[in-house]
Length: 280
Image 1 (cartoon, helix red, strand yellow):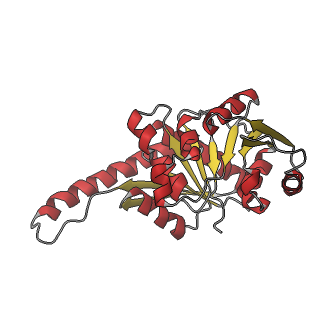
Image 2 (image 1 turned 180 degrees about the vertical axis):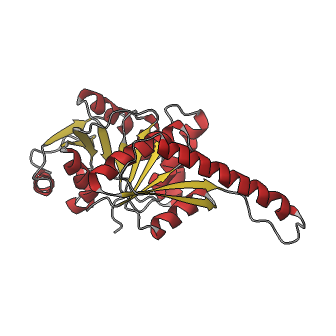
Image 3 (image 1 turned 30 degrees about the horizontal axis):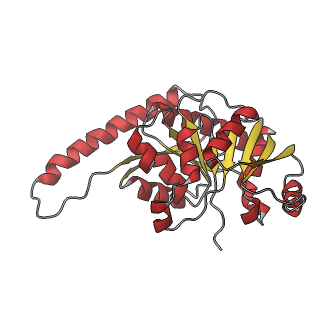
């Protein structure tokens, strides 16, 4: 696949600007276009609220004019020459706006920023970026606030061999890794000591799918929480990015079981790319 239409949610925070810079790097390598999306949410007024629209609409218009000025300043102060950039503004709940925009523009990647520090409520409930990971049907790349390094020479790929049978789902990863000539480190975490060769057929399939890229396979037999093991592996292997396959949990499962991918997105200081596993 090729990344041709990149969507970047933009609230002009430091982390959103970091995401925009990453999107520009990708766009220049792939000749992709970028859609910067600004979202506000002012509930629609009921007809019986006489006169309220005459108050709210001028405020909303002034706000949109301010947003336009911020977009102009952002584009002028970044190295965006040669990249086609469009701007979309929505008055809607964030995720409704992002979903609509991905369909309208046929986006094939979302690049979003995340703050370097999170309060206890965000750690408990998640952030806008982690919600996008859970809801998005297309790949999501989460960029930590203030990230300056666009060197992706080593990418970790967290994978559960027991639930994996189709390497083609990793197509966005292959496209990204080929752009940066990245080496791939496949990370499997298990609590059991499996017999020798038990997953070799899966590894052979993965290796064949990424035959033009450097690869290594690492298995960790460990009962600690998965995020703790992966964070340690990122440090030990000196990885530049992590790729994960979030599972398709039901609403009830999301309420009673914390998402490993969400936890990683909130704890990492390196980029994270995700694509949902295929539904069965």
